Amino acid sequence: MSDLPRKEGTGDAPSSCFHCEMPEGPSVRKFHHLVSPFVGQQVVRTGGSSQKLNPASFESLWLQDTQVHGKKLFLRFDPDEQIVSPGNNPLPEPLQKSEQKEEAGHQQKVSEQSSLSPGGADALPSRDDGPQHLGEDTPAGGAERWLQVRFGLFGSVWVNEFSRAKKANKRGDWRDPIPRLVLHFGGGGFLAFYNCQMSWSSSPVVSPTSDILSEEFHRGQALEALGRDQPVCYTLLDQRYFSGLGNIIKNEVLYRAGIHPLSPGSRLDPPRLEALVDHVLAFSAAWLQGKFQGTQQHTQVYQKQQCPAGHQVVKEALGPPGGLQRLTWWCPQCQPRLSPDEPGAQAPSSQGLALKGP
Image (cartoon, rainbow, N blue to C red; front, side, top):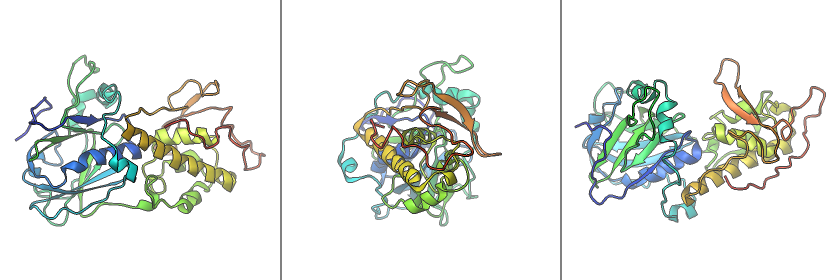
């Protein structure tokens, strides 16, 4: 059975939802926290616009486990009820015990999900779900039982509620975003996945040593990558070394470290690179903590016209030749560019390591 995104009764199931304009590691960790309560439940009804993964093929399957790595969420489905494994709970102990709170203003940018997507909401059904590795309708066939969800720039997960349009799209229509996949569970609640890519795999692709929110994050590996002869803003977005780090974190940590985005890592001395990694870990952890405390994310340079010191902020699309160009904000005064004859070590940053919230 297929449902369109309409409000539906779910008994006494609590209603909560979460949306982030550009999901990065902290946001996907929150997605994982919201999805985890459905582990051990059976899918009883489905819906959604996905054409690569037949939504109806999820019916009668059991959600057995969830894991998270960087910007990817993994869900294990099995055809029969089995003993539910503990799974991967990546949250620090204080966050495990914190009460789930709806993020303040979580619906303020819902309409942007449609307007910023090519073609608006009308284009959502035709967006690629990623490669499907199975030739059968049953997703749990064979050994491929893990659904990999990649949220891209505007993906989201809604729990027991559908995303609603807050303004007209580019065509002037007030049309609600169309979920890619909707899973109703035997416990009475449901999950709605928007604007994401999904594919099946035999096991989660997990490398904790590169995950910026993992206790197993490998600083040495990250420092070695940053020290290469290429702009540090390119390296920071390399998921092989900084999984979960996205454009927001990139801009903020470079400002806090006082490093120009195009500074070659090979010309920055070890203390500067160490400080940059410290900012990555501190900012990401503070952002995640804020999500579980219900506080909004605050940025100092990302999408700003002036930095906290009152200087004019520069915005430019930067990226490796032939690669993805990402909008980058920086302050030329707080983040001076190294001159050709200048030593590799920059002056100490006025930002230090004191973060004023995420």
